[in-house]
Image 1 (cartoon, rainbow, N blue to C red):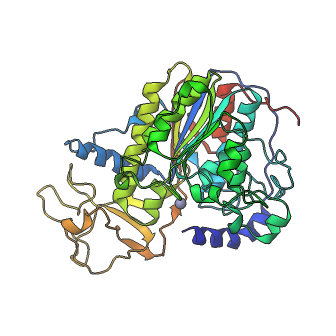
Image 2: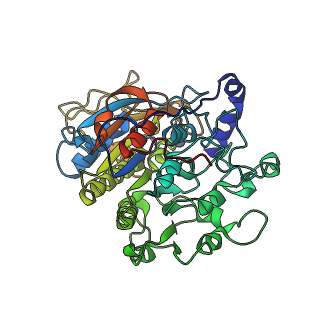
Image 3: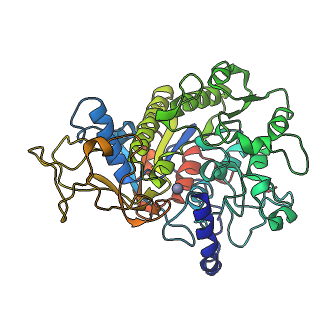
Length: 462
Ligand SMILES: [Zn+2]
């Protein structure tokens, strides 16, 4: 999947050259409600069809028909439609989209916070030469910051909170081209351990074990060597044993690569997204400074790329549970909670099935009779436009299609299912969430956050 994305980004570099870089403008602080804290939840790849199917799945898991059910964040009072294109791509990737949210600039596909006229940002020690990120403004305002993901912490969505990289592929030095190394660019993992982040919880230990630039000192040691209050945790038990009032800076890496899908985790050792979210909120809240926290349900996207709707839906249900936990642990008068997706997937819900038909099952009519296609073959309600399991003349059964590892059928055969370019939804609740209305590009999420926190222009001119 990563390989495909990199090829795509390279193929589009000619188009990228034709797109002028975006620039940030300094605007006056906006009028309107102010929040003490902001939590930005990103369901990676959680398009509208994913939300609809996951809501039905969760409802059916609770014994109701399902269509009438709602996921936790669907109760939020404010909603907007969000455009997701990248600077040079009609259908975006997670690097360009997360960069838009963190810098307020439409950004090129595959790049982390970097505009095409400034590919060396973050290199040669020029850490501050890239666009200003939400994290920089929060830090300049003496606020705390956190990152949580079920993906590797060096993966595109979390990386955009704290890093600059010409390519999302620069997760570790062994993945970087000589040209980037010659420019003095840091890998994404080293940028994390040098960053101002107060708590970072997720997967991706392997990039940190690899060592810092030009030395064998592991990046985990580099983190803890920054001071007595810099701690490292690697298990659920170590995470829950942390004294949240100690105001430590916490790096938590709970697997070598991504965390397991929610249904595959070993609950005795693998923290859930909800566990990580609660730990981060308690930690940041105890600092008393106000905070910006980004929480990513990173593996909804991965299940979709495999056309495995079961894991996409179960990870979405867990993502909704983490939002619920955040709502319960925060004061609605001081915390703005935003829930969105970075982009959608070519995931569809088709057929005229009867109400309450199992969402993962074969399409059936009101009489319980299986509905068939023009060739007399049954089909599933859920499907994908493209991906690895192309539709053929296999006679599907409910047993087959409802199995956990089943890959829904597709019409265009591809090694990995792709993102889609349709709009996604932004849900908001709390102070400043009245700004969540209308239809806009996702780069405006940056403005909603910095205006709600009142930190626009907080950056000193270093
Ligand atoms: Zn993806």
